[in-house]
Image 1 (cartoon, rainbow, N blue to C red):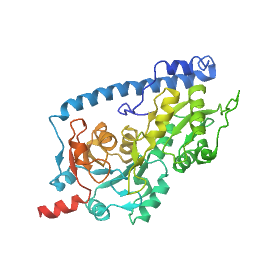
Image 2 (image 1 turned 30 degrees about the vertical axis):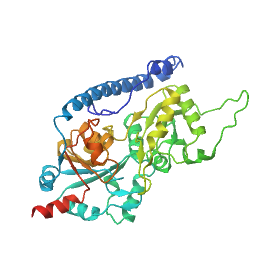
Image 3 (image 1 turned 60 degrees about the vertical axis):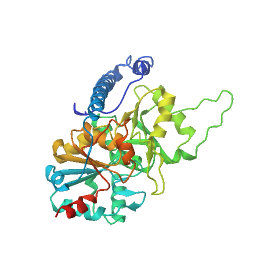
Image 4 (image 1 turned 90 degrees about the vertical axis):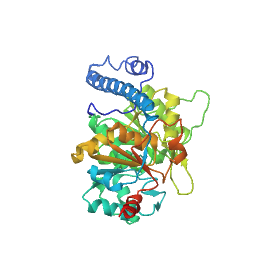
Length: 365
């Protein structure tokens, strides 16, 4: 079970929980009572945490007008104040398949100072092992245990709630999610192999779905289609207690270094529209991964600096976890967006790119 400090972003649509669990006679079956109480309590707890988190964001909005982000001028001060740096990957370490200038030297410098480095990404297309190979292909020495992708987070979340092994997971997403579910011992259907499936609508046509599906996991999917939307919708709406899990709700992503591309949030939103339910988000800015990392390494969150390029995911992720935050302008967010009067999320510090740790240090010598 998640710790009480976890504030996963989830909201339960009006009456959707009762309609799903009660009208389906789910609670009328004795064998389902234990599962119902566990899932009901868990969802209500997350709902309360979501409301609390909303209030915190409202408070942050009122404060942000008085406390703007500081430009990073003394990197040594920040480096010495924390034990661990958590880095986002897309837009911070690389763009597409291109490494951002100065990254290897910066990571080497931080390691030489005894800092723990952790890499957290909302991209669910790869597993931890596959991300390890990407780091290696870019000339970066990173252990698999230092990598936390939202594909891994989805499987880890299911383990944290004792998701029944006899239940199946329907996946709208790519290979990374499938591999992490397999490693966790969960049965899955869907994924890329459903990318070529089509629905031929005829009078009286009824689409069948697997009633043993207990969770639908939605991530970034380049093979997204109407078949997947309908299948996932049927599972969530008709299977008693079926969970709706999103790896992230990012609007855009960096598939290449040439432009921004529609992100996993666009796939999630399609299911939100068809089910009229909100998902449980296990990726940033939900603190599930933060709590997991802190527990895994025995890290105090006050001794962590979160480094990212997105205000509404990376920086909010760090703030929700009680960490220091550093925004880099090498990815999604630019200075105009940071200083916009409509932006209520202010990091502790901002800088152009992470290699500024080196250039600014040299300038102060």
